[in-house]
Image 1 (spheres, one colour):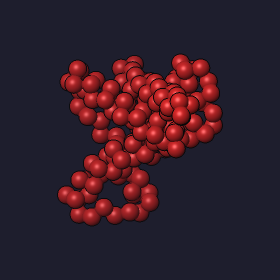
Image 2: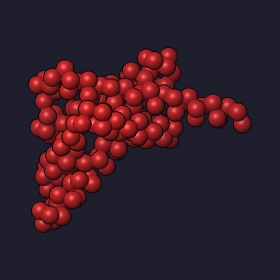
Image 3: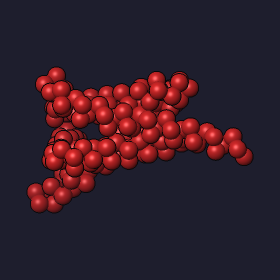
Image 4: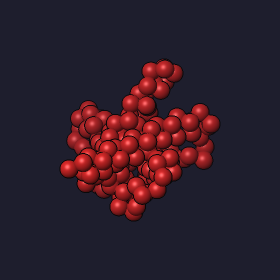
Length: 150
């Protein structure tokens, strides 16, 4: 449960850093969450209704998939023991783990190909995932300290 809570906090941190990047560089939102939702629902043969409603559903499903990835990754990476590593190492591994999960999904669905990304694309992906890792590690530390105070 601690890992899922930490993963949720990490997802918020990732989104905040992403939105800050969008605001500072005036870059548009990524279309990959909606494209991922569309490809996934197509592969699972799940209809989303008429196109006007389907577009709205994809707009909701895309971010939900991202949040679910963050929460589940936090739980999974905590279970395998990353929380026992030194803080900076754990933060890097948590960030890399969720980045691998999200980019692996994008690649598997044919939405994106990281081999074709520019240096700026990679930085725009690495920095928010590092924020995710730092937030997960900090949250796990707080949860652990809170438990020992009782």
